[in-house]
Length: 82
Image 1 (cartoon, helix red, strand yellow):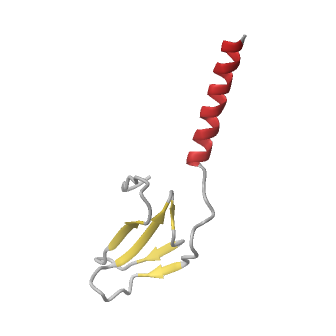
Image 2 (cartoon, one colour):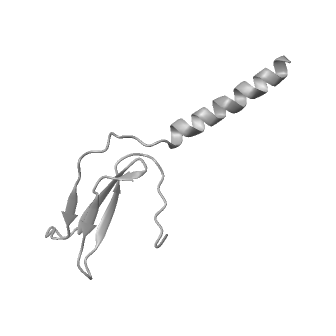
């Protein structure tokens, strides 16, 4: 009986940890919209904090570049498309 309770506790703890670790955070800064008119030569910077982009949208012209900046240590995978 105790083994079953420990297994159930372990499974529920693992699920709770996974939900907490993958959950979203509302601590994003207010980024708003950014246009690609940066003349510093770096291009437009897009900041990412956690699993969210800080800016809600970015507009660039054909030929302009963007620089993706991770503001934390969370690993991110960038892929083209969906």
